[in-house]
Length: 321
Ligand code: NDP
Ligand code: OXD
Image (cartoon, rainbow, N blue to C red; front, side, top):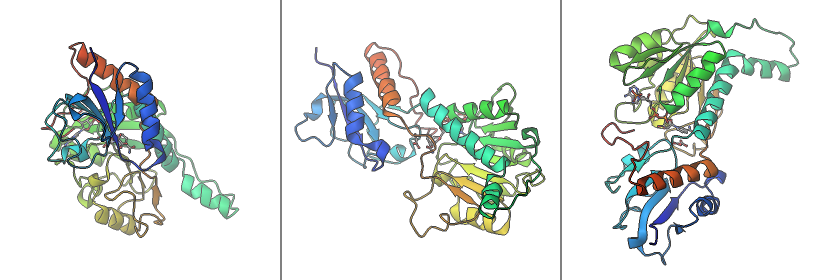
């Protein structure tokens, strides 16, 4: 029997999102299944059973009468959920070790950069200034992670291993060995009050939009060795109120920020974040989705589905993640 076709719909515009590269990887792992890159006028829409997508335009997934499952090629599904034309089918998101490890690398890199005073040291090198500052132990710094899902929990474990005091905040209650866990509305303030470096790995939902704002920053602990609280956001740009974030950096409510994500991406050239002296900026590549790892993940999930087994990591449309 001919297997249902997998349609690939990829808009990205960056090196990692080369449609041809993704097609080659999917061809390799779906050897007995037709894989088509959309748009493809020669493709019979009735043959498409699965779609693997990155940033589809509204309406692009309509018109496939036999579509069964949509696979998002990333972890964050906010843009897909916001599309009212999205077919009402299981939507599967990425949750693979490869992506998780990449995010943990990013979080560790930037927590360490703040903790080890990288900005001061690079400035000192430029100025030929041999003036070491006291180096606090990691145990003097409390890192608070918003979001204790696949990414947050792994980053928390790595930071704990390095000796930081680590806490986390999630929607539901959790018990994670060595991590001080808070949850829900009531847990937010106590979580913030003891946090020096705030790492945001939340999904963007109606409940989390603009959660990173002045009121929240004002609750962070200012008494730590870094002098003022630091924010690292690698979740989504819509989590931060950018005007308030800038004001807080300018007036000292925040000491520094590392930002991988922005409300408008690519970040416009006139954005003040580009040249802000307290901002370390990366172009939404904290954790790239790797075509090798993700194509295998999707192929495995399709095989499970066709054996009648449940799909993993299906998005809960009511929660929004
Ligand atoms: P998960 O769904 O595994 O985890 C999400 C976490 O956020 C959970 O702990 C969840 O709580 C918590 N959460 C959600 N809503 C709330 C809320 N209202 N209040 C408190 N906690 C909440 O997601 P991942 O860890 O896989 O990914 C997180 C996000 O990271 C993605 O949605 C995406 O936006 C972003 N991302 C960014 C990348 C980048 O390169 N910059 C790459 C990959 C992902 P609970 O556990 O109780 O459900
Ligand atoms: C993702 C991302 O959601 O790259 O995977 O942001």
